[in-house]
Image 1 (cartoon, helix red, strand yellow):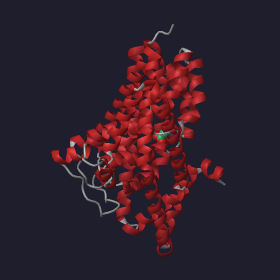
Image 2: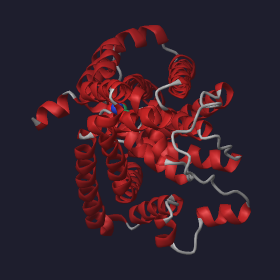
Image 3: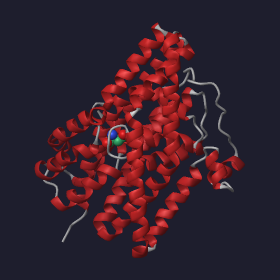
Length: 401
Ligand code: ASP
């Protein structure tokens, strides 16, 4: 049973959407109690977000920091990861600001207080006097900084910190398993959320506006992903390696299609390795180092999606985010992508962290859940493409031996 749910989770989520919509439109009174499933599902996600952020960020930083051991190869890899992630989020933010997919939508719930602004609020958001109070009020930016710095200091402690890093890695594995268990309930949660939406808005014109908004949002994500994959990455590839982009891309076809159909960079890894090493003839050791690591930490597509989704949710609630708040989204989207596991829907879970960081309502996830099964496929393909380009770029810049 559990295996069946795990294997067919995406299909079941899709079914949840359809059943929720049809049921609540045709028989609202019997559907009504089931909307609490959506509420419980979101609460479960919120419940794990604090430990998830702490262990994910700290372990990601120590993982990246460890690459110093790999000398030039490690350094070039980090530079490539950071540059392309930053480029991806920038493309996403520019597109979502230009297209404004969420403008004019009806917010999913009205009991939301707009985030604060001004310098005192900025300091309180970034550097509050009390961590526990901040977390209790869902202000998680300080936790992000603290986890990041703790990661840096652990690396600087060298061998002495090995035990602590191991412990955090194990804790992180455990928490990720917990998250996966929660995601298994996503089909029921999504059904409940859809029922809640339809009952609130009566299934009429407002639902229609939401659907149009979500359509625009999906187009924005896909257009931004396409720009990053077809313009930004090939430009870097061509400038640094001088090789033919189209040939390289064609040779990656099998891996990209697998990424699209599995929505998992990890599941695609064996095929990515074969396409990059055998078909594209990238130095085996470089690819063998960069691809497994990239599958879990270098996710251009996920970073881009996180930023667009957070901005879309802000727009749909009619919240105007100041530049510094967008800067925070920029930072947390990058961290969320590094922290996301290479499995289906992982980006959706780390989204909670991006939303929390600027005080956006997690309920907004209900808006994007419906299309996430599809967008996940596109962003996973871009994640794998980013890693593959990275292998060739770093290979061209690093001479081993
Ligand atoms: N599914 C993505 C991957 O495996 C991660 C995500 O959910 O964004 O690369």
